[in-house]
Length: 231
Image 1: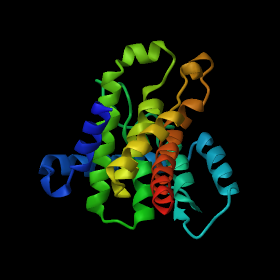
Image 2 (image 1 turned 30 degrees about the vertical axis):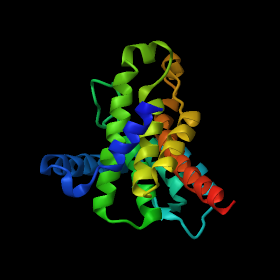
Image 3 (image 1 turned 90 degrees about the horizontal axis):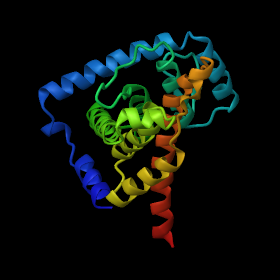
Image 4 (image 1 turned 135 degrees about the vertical axis):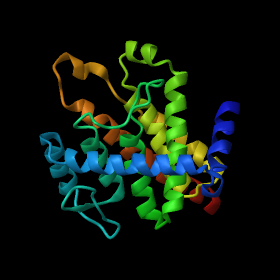
């Protein structure tokens, strides 16, 4: 738990006021790139299929506009749709050292959490930075070649934990809840490389599911802490 606690502490200490101008500018640039890629990705057949499913799940009072789509959905499901679309045209950002695409998992989760929290753009940036840090560092630690050799797609697996931290940071969860969020996210992490066998579109689902699972993990962690307090 020592490494996990240190990671949580580092993420909680990320503050907009202490981020360098270069980091803030880079985050904004990556976000704008993500918006464009996600909007264009919404035109793909795989996105049409996902959007039909998400819309079929119905609306509720917390429904948020889906980036690039002409409909609203619960933030958890909006993250699923947007993450899937953003990865569909293979133009998303990449961290070569960890061989993964952080924006498509972290940013949909961050947007969903920001909508739920009604937070400022500054807190959104803090969450994105934290998510990028966790996702990229985890990808490096897992050794991409070894991870691929075991049949896993780093964007899907590492992205789930990065998305969870981004959402937890934006929702301002306490340290214990952030730790729970990582654990819950780890139980949902997925991303099989089997799509290589026949070119299946399931690869596009990986970051969408990571974003969805990350937000869900943060929400479950928050409620768990509340339930424990009530008891």
